[in-house]
Image (cartoon, rainbow, N blue to C red; front, side):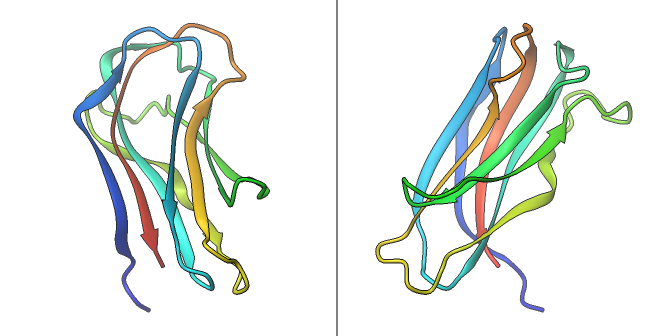
Length: 134
């Protein structure tokens, strides 16, 4: 099996820290190749004073083209085994999406979202968005 290669890594320099928000929407788009498969993930951490994530799920979503249908995976950030300030990836397993062979000028639209749960939350640090060809 071939090792996935990082196609795009979008480092947040400095990393983005959500201090206090009621909704999260981090989006991007990249050109991709027809007939290929990609995985999408985000490198994140919860600070020691993070709050509001209990019972919340974030969604990592992706689609091919503006009019494409979204695929998604959800991830809980509040796992009791998480160490504060330690980087981890969401979602696990990573979101995979295939680009149909006949797609002209394909673009991958992707994002990290928590827009359905309106409670206040904070302390999430976003380091990278990663798109890998697999």
